[in-house]
Length: 194
Image (tube, rainbow, N blue to C red; front, side, top):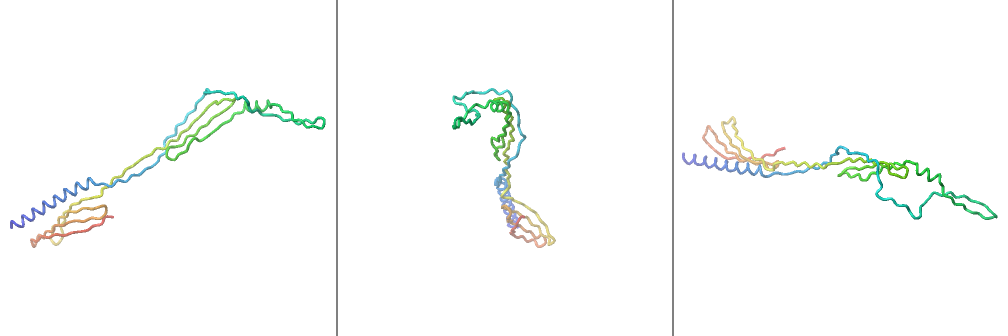
């Protein structure tokens, strides 16, 4: 009788050691999955007025709009070249708007400008920046899932189960005690988690 009690005590101690080892292995061993998403942020915009030039340069040989007149004299053709003052004035008073996109990067964002030039001056510059933020999400899933169980069936048998899953495949050790016939035995089981 002492021998049977001693065996049961050893089995219990062995099961508890396996459970504790499996418990710590399951908590420390994780599989990490990283998901990266790029999310649009709120646009930032503004306008700058009263711009002062950083440098002003007058060219030595300016390019001016010209009027070319053809004149016929004494069987010769002469070309009369005059500066077109009306074209210079029209160019001076014309308002021009420029809307360049400085960059459009799917990982950084988009920067657009809007500039107005009139009377040979840059009168205003507007900007709009649509930022894109990088969001990194890390998912940690356990690789080892230890489990313990206790079961009773209609054959008057008590079963103690101890096992572990590695990802989706599991193995377990069963200690079976037949309460009617006073017999004990061992079993092994395989499981698949889906």
